[in-house]
Amino acid sequence: MNARVLRDFFEDRIEASVLNADLRDAFEQTSLDGFRLRMTDLTEDFAVRSEHLVKLCDAVLSGRLDAGALRAVGFGMIASNHFDWDGDAPGGAEVAETLHDWASPEANYDLSPGTVARFKHRLLTGQNMFTRADTVQGRPQRRDDWNSVDDAPPA
Image (tube, rainbow, N blue to C red; front, side, top):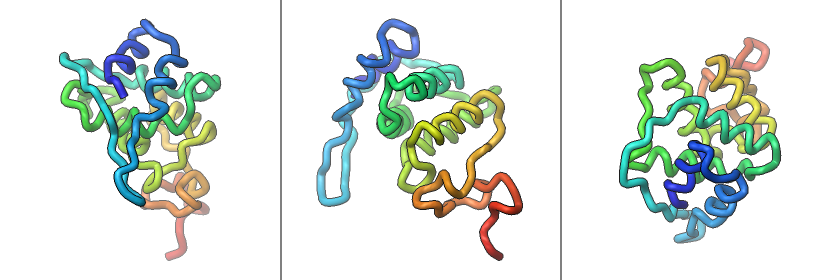
């Protein structure tokens, strides 16, 4: 993963297909269940806003970016020394939460067009539309993952 490619996508310098190709082999398997992200970081800071992540969601929803590529994006942006976001700024909490969800789909939400549409909605509105069915194998990991009493786990 080359962070410059991601930044260039955010800045409309490249198409989603170029980003998709860059992210295709971003993870290297290091053991039976271990993986390492191969990443070249930026050399300067880049301020991430919710509209950048919405742009990624739109690329997935239009079929130009594989939903699974969001795992590398989330992990890479969190690990980066130069992708920055302000969790206290408008939309900042949603950016942070979305990147963490993308970085660990095995513990949070599957990465699919259906969940990407929900990520986009949350980024745009702050409203959580996820249900237990969106989580890995239908097992919610956090109590705040349910958006209704009917969807809550048994007591």
